[in-house]
Length: 174
View 1 (cartoon, helix red, strand yellow):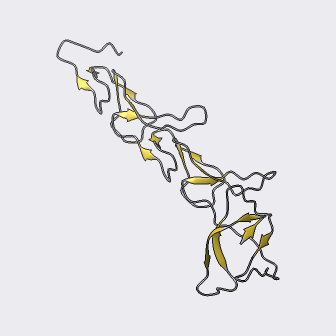
View 2 (tube, rainbow, N blue to C red; view 1 turned 180 degrees about the vertical axis):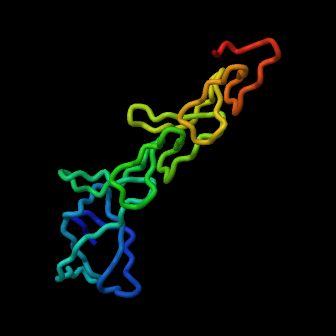
View 3 (spheres, helix red, strand yellow; view 1 turned 90 degrees about the vertical axis):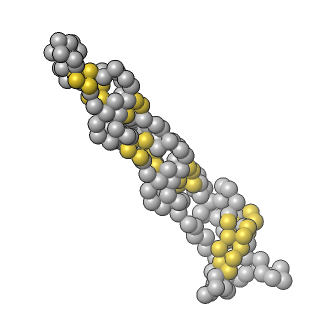
């Protein structure tokens, strides 16, 4: 099978309609508007009009095809983004409080208690950051940490709750 003059690999004929349908892997850069030529067993060319259809890009990837260049181009979503279904044309940025730490993510994970994440400049978080001293987060999936209220404090990174001040001491928050 030749698609636009390039050899298709891994040809498998349909078990139901072996003389009508086959599947193969097209070479990188194969466009959807290319002609298809089927060379039969004895070197004979198929006389039938053939068309090319393709499988949509898998979850965790997106089709980077443009109107000008009609290449079939599945591209993995970078860390901080995801696609959760086939056939997407763009990755979705992880929202605040969530992250995707690897390529080709199909979902974002929520930040644990004591941590937070923020999407910056249109890019989602690749990991979560521990809450700073003086702040806490007692809920998963937060986009920021909360300042400890008056009469409490946090003296460690990543706390899920503030500590009560000792009698006669305060944290300076009014």
